[in-house]
Every structure is written in structure tokens, then in C-alpha cells.
Length: 123
Image 1: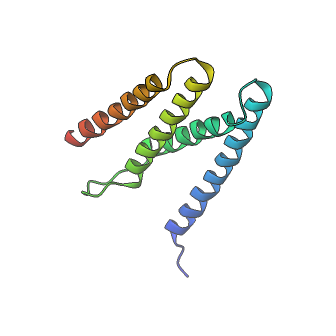
Image 2: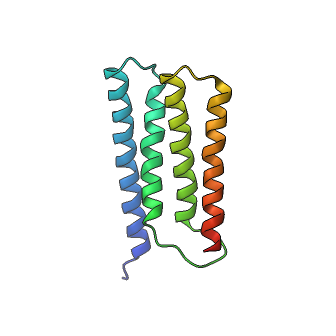
Image 3: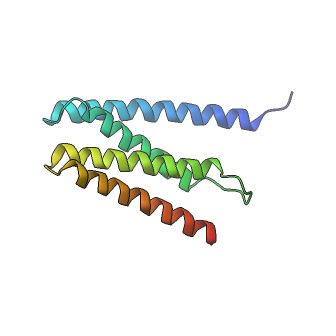
């Protein structure tokens, strides 16, 4: 019976993601309990930690030269977007910035992602 390495890697990836998810949720709860932030700060910390994990994981994934985007590229986009939304959410809670300023910050972060992705495609 042959060993299916893709199946073993998928189980390992799922186990790591479950562990990171539990740790991110625990970290969010600890931040909420220690600080005087509102209860939904748990979700912002969760988004930041999961986004950072996905982003770091996608950077070190090997990519192929096909036309279709790889798992690493999807991870790069989703990880960056989770980090951006978490960052803007933390800014919304901790500062007195108006909503339109936060929206502009989010648009600038998304524009940076688009520019980075378009420049990466030309290299």
C-alpha cells in the first residue's frame, strides 16, 4: 500500500490551522480580559493572528509557474486582507478617528495589495 504524501500533508496543515485558530481565540480572550477594550476586540485579535499566520505561510509556500493562482497567492491575499481589516478595527477602537478616515486607510491598504500583486506578476 502506497503512502499518499498529499493526504499526510493535508492532515498536518489542518492540524496546524486548528491549533493556530485555538491559540488566536485564546489570545483574543486574554487581550479582552486584560485590557478595557470591548468584547468584539476578540474577533479583531483573532483576525490579526489568523491573517498573519496565513500570510507567513503563503510567503514560504512554493509557487508554480502556471497561469492559475496558487494556494500561496490566495493565502497572500486573504492573509493581507485579514490583517488590514484587523488593523483598521483596532484603529477604530483605540482612536477617535472618523469612519471615512478608517475607510480611506482600508482602501489604501487594499491598493497597496493590488500594486504589489501587479508588480509581482510582471517580475
